[in-house]
Image 1 (cartoon, helix red, strand yellow):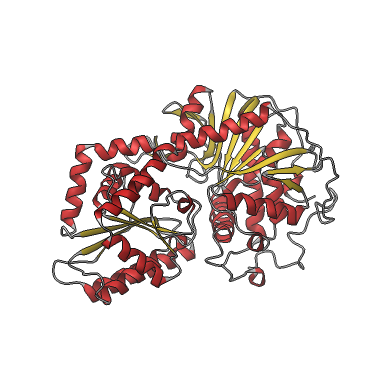
Image 2 (spheres, one colour):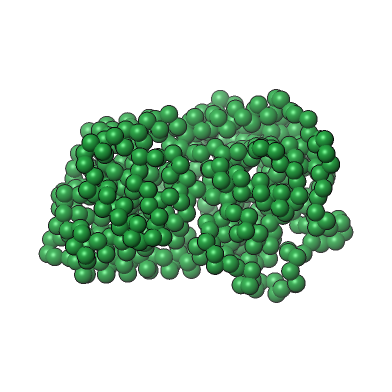
Length: 529
């Protein structure tokens, strides 16, 4: 039996008290730097906004890591949310989080923009940490509770929880893209990941294409039958036959809250100050991204620099504010992208700058929500040019803040948001010429066209809110729980012979020859996009 399949079914674990359990890599808290006793403060995001009301109404619990390694913490309550910490050691952070999650899965799921690394020691750590999360779920969940697992760091948890607590309704949501089968097939532990996800009753994806990619992988690797969005999972691995739904549930934002911030007189005044601080140009362009190679920051800077050099944009008229939030700074690829971005900023400013005029204002730190709203209000053109993105909520946040129906959005075709924000100027960020043309179109767009396009996008974000997203997902999960369908297919499901080995035989990590334990498997890495 594979490592993932080694968890034993247990029905003796006593039930917990929580009727609704959220499981995510991180708890929604950070250490409060102003608290001498090292207390906590909430770090609210879209997920907190979506699930907090449900947690409070159903005595829910949130299971996750505190962000502090090598320390054990007792459960605690903050802002009405009951938080249950999971301990990670420094080695877990290195191998499970920075390693397998962010140097293996992240690049693989984002079209192999950089080569993923495959190390068995990282995989072993990923399994151990997922087991730890699953055990915590089994401990705190009440009988017949609803469990909602989130994101690529915890893809094995649904199957592990189903073994430990078959009474639970289990949902999983993947916040990042799910790759095409040809890319996913590179992963040595592809079958284990698929089986892990299929422990859920409902699996949510950002786009229909992501759900289709997953179902195709299930058919191609496991040989399971699919019909529409439903996967028929046959009995095995100590689990009965069951049905799994794999469907798109595109996530959104807290639109009413952002609109309220955008009306705040202090924030409106701050937006005016930002424009003054950059010289009151005719056009302020804005980029807001994590410092990540998937976000297309280098491509954006190249296009902007060429437009200035060619005289198609005037340094006296246009300023680009690029906010790049620090991210995963210990990983080599993130060091490289920061170096390249800062080199590009320096080159553009060095070639184009005059006394008193700086074309690129580069800010490498994070900002609170109020300040970010002011930046959105200050910007005439928003540049969201990710090479690959599950959704990209920044695009939606910019639209939500444009309460006067002004502004223009330049949006990558390769974001989930592109399927919903049809009023944006769509670009292929891999094509610098197309990117330049899109930027020029947004800068030169007449007021009437801007208003028409922005109204269209604002109407979409006004109806598709993060609250509606969570309600839709949980309602679908509840429906599945209350209305179980026939779970045995009429025709027998033929599985491929290469499933889990017998229980007494340890599984090899792939069907390739044995490799050194900590070697990078470079011959398994494709450069295709």
